[in-house]
Length: 448
Image (cartoon, rainbow, N blue to C red; front, side, top):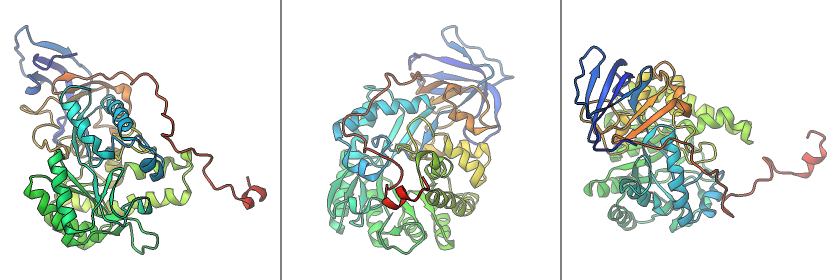
């Protein structure tokens, strides 16, 4: 372990600064948890003997990955039923404290958890900051604000009260009171499920379940208390209204039309598309029993939205990397690199632009903009050392054996596999007997 007060030099590496600049050979001096100086290879380095030296010749020095959309308390459910009815608060907190260590091993030095079961993300963040457990830097929301439509969980949620990660609000007074309560409890973000699913909806994406006036009330109340607002938006009108209402970050932002795009560009509101979930299901869904129609739907969501997202990016709208890690299709520590791959292959960013989206730009999601996410003098020393060149191939960041060292605030983090191999507590998972309904006609059709 490297003491946070000790000075040391990461020497002779290939530096990717996370700011979009061309990589260069050099060394990085760490002092009291921050980057003191960045040397280019030709510069003379004269340091006292007390400064430790770590030679990383042939490896890449870069900012740690930041994940702008990770649900650390969910523990990889396969269904909303499992998420809302098979998770216990105390046990979820204990398991989250274990799962957060998997992110370190994957090179993640910070993440945003926009909503959590029973708001345990607040306590987990505080435990990490107090040094009680190891983990990346966190920014957190509390309970997501939902209307009685139920967000993406529909009828599984009650018409009022709380369940799982959600708080259902019905009146303007309830909206104001809930925002104030969450700020009192220490959230970094207020999250709103602007869209959701309804049985007979006739729209592309999801149904907008908040009106503009309600969205503006959320942002006005939160901003008066110095707290930003993030919105789950799948659908053109929701994106338009969230941008106009002053939302600080939009998750997904799929199915944009011209009016929504114009509103986003005018507001300059960052977008975290969070395509990793869709990409994994589209590419690997057959391996976990997903239907071909669902795979095709998610693949089309990426392809249909990529053009508008690239137009937004070209107009100056930041795109942030978020993976929605925390579900069975996006387990912890496995896919935190995948959004970079989607940004390059599907949206059309360069590798350097994608890395910037996952590092210095993503510091915004941590509410540490300008403080972390870059190899630059004065920044927090949140750094990873990678065996290979992620500029040539961003997917090497998904090979955990290539993540040779992780530093947070200049302190070397444990990167060994999380041990022992865990089992699931009783009742934690919903039993699955197969991937289809075993109806009579199927059994007797001779097509098995």
